[in-house]
Each structure stands twice: as structure tokens, then as C-alpha cells.
Length: 152
Image (cartoon, one colour):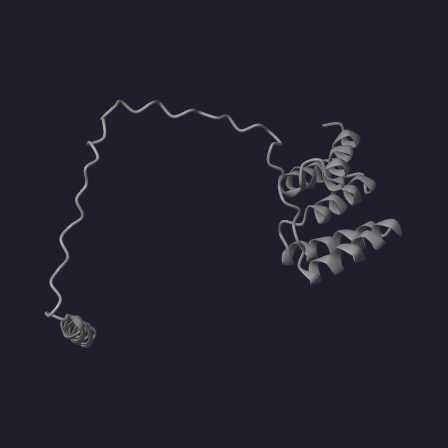
């Protein structure tokens, strides 16, 4: 610790010497600028305007998927289309371990659980997916359709 302070002290001294060496006493210091503007009036500040955010006014950006997660999402979608719902679930969960915010993986999980007759699990993944889906996107619409299917 003392070694640090010794180095710090030496560095400060070196900077002080460099600063003194660059000062040239032959040039006189310039006088401060003269201002003739009147002092500003002191007024009571206005209350700041409170703007309520509008829902959906700023859409969430679409998540840019990691290439590995994108590949797993495509594979999971293929498994779902082939009615391999357990495989789609396993693949989508692997993708979520790579990219937690991939709303399309949540959609695949929700749809697969609906097909397996597990609406509570499907709803859980709908809720998660809606947190990350861009409002008005195809994925968000798909998640809302799953929600309607399970009756919530």
C-alpha cells in the first residue's frame, strides 16, 4: 500500500514540475474579460411538466438472437411442426440457456405445452415471452393466441 502512495506522490511531483516548466513568465497574464450584461433575474422555477408514458408508444426492440440460439430456435420450430413436442421443448430450453430474452423460444415452449395438454405451463411461458416480445410483433400475437387457447 505504501508503494502505491510513494508512486502516486512521485507522479504528482513530476506533474507539478512539468506544469511549472511550461509556464513562461515573459507573457503577462491577460486580464479577465469585462462583461456588461445585467445580472439575470431570479424567478421562481416552474413546476416540471409530468408526461405520462403511453403504453406501446416506444416499442421494445426485437431481440437480436445469438447465432447459436437462432439455430436452436429454428430446430425447435421444426420439431414442433413435426409434432415432436418433447423435442421442441428440450431444444427451446437449450436455446433459452443461451439467450434468455428470446421471445420466440417462449412461444415454441407455450405452444408445445398446449399440445401436450399442460395449459398452466403454457401460460407461464406466455407470460415470460410477453415480457420480451416486441409489442405488435408476430411473436407477441402468437403468444396472445396461446393465452386465448388456454383460457386466461
